[in-house]
Image 1 (spheres, rainbow, N blue to C red):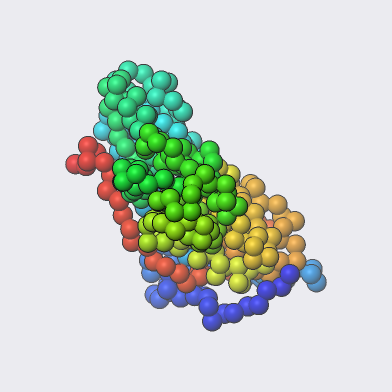
Image 2 (image 1 turned 120 degrees about the vertical axis):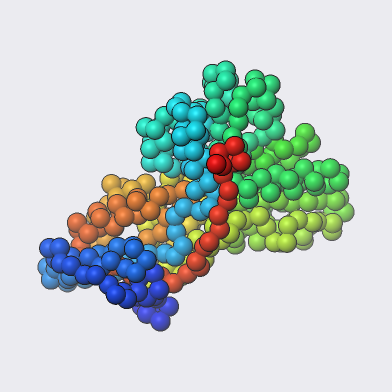
Length: 364
Ligand code: SF4
């Protein structure tokens, strides 16, 4: 399917990619351009050997923003800081972030990943993952006197606080999220009273409350903006006394990446989302591409790219979930370059400058 090319929406060789004072050099048929901000992109020359259905040069649109968010950076920095300060091994409860490459890298440096506190030896440095943990997990670690560093994203911790406050006021707490996701398990475990999980609008009808019951909702941080809006509207339609955060708890990074991928889908014929199968925010990005009507695939890295996907495609959009390193995006681009000459295009989009401080114990 050929989509419209609205070049006016694109930042072709602009902003991030502005070739001001660019240093160029020829490497084979590729032109390497050193951008002012130090990033480097390569523009492939048309090979001229494309068939009638497949344009010789493939435009590769890169979403802005994409990849690591502040919570993921903080979590990884926490593990690396602990390894530096306390030495290996350190024990991380659950994958520190949902990306196998990140986990493998930290394993190689001496981090051990476990699912239960019981698996952690006495006295070992213990780190909670970015997704947060239930209070029972905190209590178990405390009972064992484990030295704990909490890498829970502050935006997840904020939701935990909301749940406790709402429950303290006697409201029935509804959590909008996906069953079994580790963040959801941690959020539901913030209070002793039941937290009612709602994953879709249809679930609202099954909530066991009277129409005038006091209800409070919170949301998982990595949901679809559109789906969540619909569920909140369904809650407000069924119940007369509903409170919650201003709109939802979907974090800035999830929202920015969803907005960016929508812009990408307006231009691209194919969407590749770099991310892990268990990454919630990455899966939401794929869903947006599919809803936009273009073939959309989640790829762990370049090895997962099927060359057949590119047949007849003139423009591919690439983004990355919040836990996917930029190196994996570049790996995907590298694999594509081996198949087709490419033109790299950086989309305009939100510039993020959010930073979260690492745990106090690790600050020098
Ligand atoms: S996706 Fe959002 S909530 Fe999750 S770690 Fe990143 S900033 Fe925090």
